[in-house]
Amino acid sequence: MTQKADLRLEMFSPDNIQGVAALAAECFTTPWSESIYQRELENPQSVGFACMDGRRVVGFIHCNFVLDELTLNTLAVDAEYRRQGIARRLWAAVTEMMTGVCSVCYLEVRESNIPARTLYESLGFAQNGYRPRYYSQPDEAAVLMMCNL
Ligand SMILES: CC(C)(COP(=O)(O)OP(=O)(O)OC[C@H]1O[C@@H](n2cnc3c(N)ncnc32)[C@H](O)[C@@H]1OP(=O)(O)O)[C@@H](O)C(=O)NCCC(=O)NCCS
Image 1 (cartoon, protein in one colour):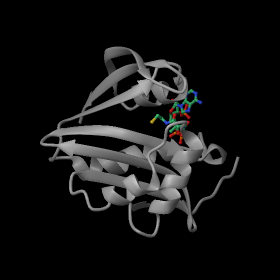
Image 2: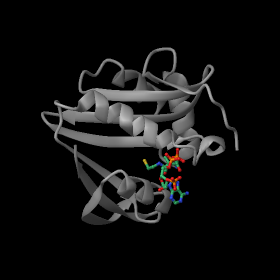
Image 3: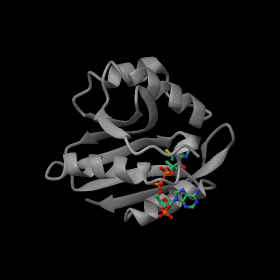
């Protein structure tokens, strides 16, 4: 495990978005492409933070919002940097920014993804739905969760 005291959070920008897409490609079987993340830089309904170790992206969170509803699309931390509170810090940055803008957040997570489900429960999310065969590669159900902000 890599442990660094000087990790810092910054908003998505042209400087870090390539690293964000690269980390997404490492962590997910069907990641968004770099061009999709590039487009999100221009989207006023988008909020994203990257966790940086120097110039390297070691974690990120990406959400979209419509009116007062926030959707957590993606949260990922480099395998070498997990269990150090980075995901919690990324979520705290989003909630700080969105307080007063959004009142509720929704997400979907693979049923077998116990680390993420445990994390989301610890952040105050609760299950509010279930979609069988929602994901592919591999086929899997989605657990739907929500949290009041
Ligand atoms: C899920 C993920 C983002 C967690 O990131 P992280 O930085 O390691 O999480 P944190 O260190 O902030 O953990 C916060 C809490 O989440 C829970 N948690 C995190 N990883 C866990 C694991 N492997 N098993 C059980 N609980 C876990 C714990 O409650 C933890 O608190 P604790 O360490 O005090 O026990 C990371 O494992 C990851 O990137 N996984 C692959 C991508 C993914 O599945 N993303 C989510 C779906 S979009």
